[in-house]
Image (tube, rainbow, N blue to C red; front, side):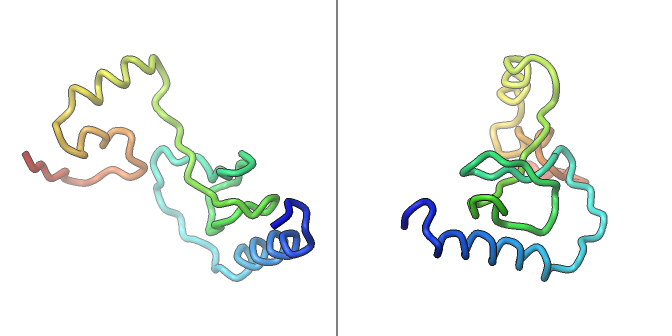
Length: 104
């Protein structure tokens, strides 16, 4: 499909705005280090909310996170020093488990 075809423009404007208008407002939820929604196609950033597509290019949105400030090498060392399971990434997860389970 051509980049500026009428069908692409209809899809872009119609579905993205329709999705934003038909979803009920979300309740307050702690999303940890999640800072917004970022378009994988054009890079536009949106506030966290119940949308799935970019309103500008209809690209898919993914969650953007604020990683801990500081030296990236230090973060890498902390992750590598963690348990040999998925729980090594727990400090970077958007929500915190109340009691992490360990499977070794």
